[in-house]
Length: 233
Image 1 (cartoon, one colour):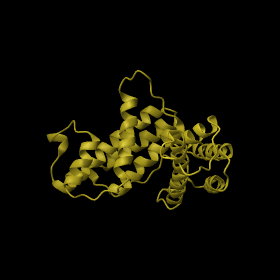
Image 2 (cartoon, one colour):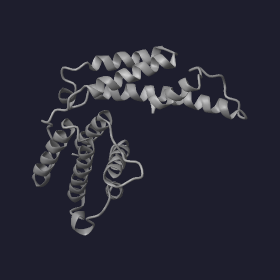
Image 3 (cartoon, helix red, strand yellow):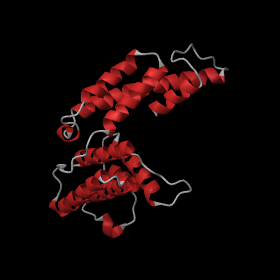
Image 4 (spheres, rainbow, N blue to C red):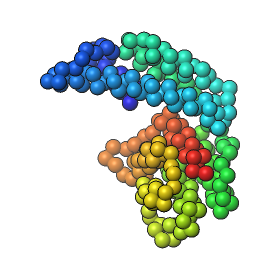
């Protein structure tokens, strides 16, 4: 989103600073909203980067890699008012993320033995697919991992096995059912699962335009998936 907003700003040759938008001036309002979105996303990027450094998987995802470069570029984003320089910083951050290897030895949270082996096998295969460049396959496995985890969580809370009663239930419906049972979920969890599910749908079902996820997109989804497992259990 940040890259897209900056791209619009650069193409339209608009400044990063805005005057107070006139209610009747649609273009002025659009410009103001665009600049506001850019700064909001920089703040969000900074927040996620700080959380990433404290993440329990820190040693897996970033050990020996220049996480400091990400922070350096975020500081550069905050200091400059030049959209083109900001775009260079965003590209630099994407480059750092794209260069990070995915380790295959991901430690699962404490899950029940009934699903532990299945989740382990899927996680290992997911990483093999990623490292082989099979990004759509990796995303599809993310969806499978989420289904297994959410079904198990629901069973632990209610004692009911939805795999028998409603085998075709979607991830969104599973989240709704968990919420109905007063299961406290992280506010961002639903958004993360929705993102993974949407990418998975585009990867599996035939569309007019084929979906080809990039390495960086897939990496983010893999990280989201592992993060969700840790939050669920």
